[in-house]
Image (cartoon, rainbow, N blue to C red; front, side):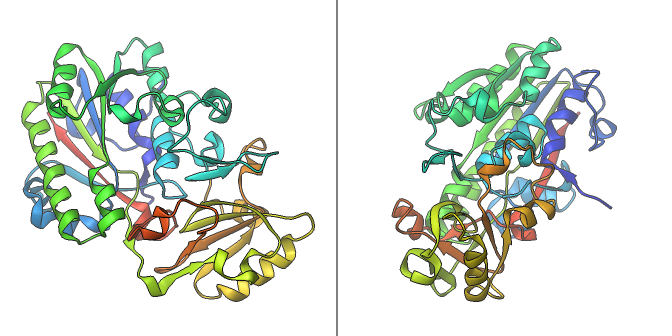
Length: 373
């Protein structure tokens, strides 16, 4: 049976709220019926395969796994399994090849500039870089009120504009109770409310999955979800999902392309991230770069030309306007491998412990948990 996708979550939420053009491919309405409020929470880094380990510090998630509360199903995220890509796939309901946010960092075609989507502000303009309408816009046009309660540091970014346009943004500051803000928005009016937490993913990156800090973050996220469940008004559904899973990459499994002259030869621009690299080559160098990378990374990564990578279908249908954002050579890591680029990225990237981005089940499988009436 084909798994549902992160792309199906907001259309299903819209269908719950009576939007006639929305299709509930996840059959959530069969579980909760019609509602007048839907709360969608994205827990960054809450991978499907991580749930059993998380459950020891997360009583609510443990109860979900045991079948005692909520309804749990497995979805897949889109590729690359990275946050910018999947935030936009969630909110547009589209594959990365359609919306154009094809990785954590991308080369802006015609330039040597690499756009980091997390640090993106005004340039390129978000409506040009990500041209598709969001489900927030579609809901608003259908007369449904949509509010997104986001950590203050996200408000004003290019990624937020590209992913959340159409929603009324509510900034949550560190000294405020995030759950109370979300609960207040739910109580204020019918419609859709969206929330986001990065705590679990941050702990995974900095300290590693399974670390003490990661388990503490799991407990904190579980407390957040527990309080939200307790605060749900009548006739409200809560949908909890994630943008990716992850894994730890030990030092012995890391390569630094900038430390190996074989891997820098013929390279013009390096983009992507350590689990998925986009290599833009010097004119005429693509064949040599492909051959060299295939030899050096044999058994550790799949190395494709752009055309081969698109033909795999991993990106979904790729708009011609978005093709140049994909490298001439695409490197998709297997196993625990990561390809660092210390000469092209901030030094903190090489210090990370947890990673994601590739196409393994550990990175791509995500949960959908449904609470409510």
